[in-house]
Length: 195
Image (cartoon, rainbow, N blue to C red; front, side, top):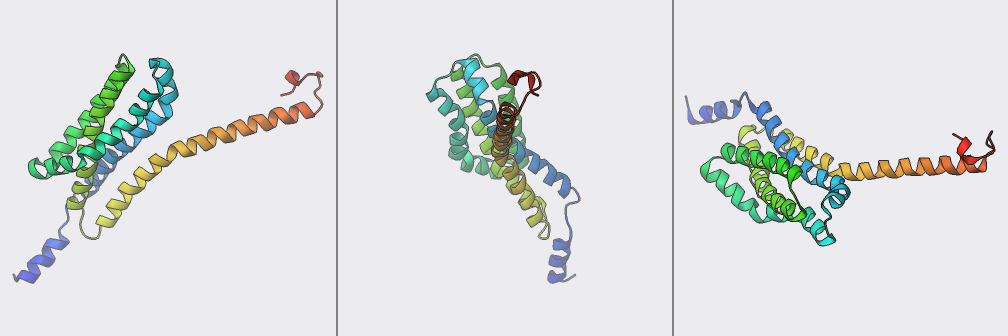
């Protein structure tokens, strides 16, 4: 077999597990995106429960992204040197453990520390999921793989805005209903009697 034929045969051969690998990597990227969204949605309850100051709230929301950006190159390098799959699984396990610890922390400072560890684990997952996608997908499937990963992250990151618009729309509907019932005639003669 000639060298050109060997190259053509090598490019046609694809990993039969590539779609499962895509699913696992998209799920890993999804956990990174969901983590920040959940904190944003739960922040009022967290603030009330832990009696957190505004400075502590600011740290809770930003420490994870700070650690992610500080350690993302180290996470990618560790994966390249010692195995992408190993460190991606380590990071995912660390994120799960951090999520469990976030539910049982005694105070705001402990939550900040756990969120910092969570950010370091995200720095292992995020670059390595994309690296595994690049290696596992063939030339024809690479665009699909990266688009799936990117679209999943964008949808989850946009969900707080969608939820906020939904809450605002509900509030406006309730307010319009209250106004219309006050302007209309109520059978009982009181606004409380209108429904």
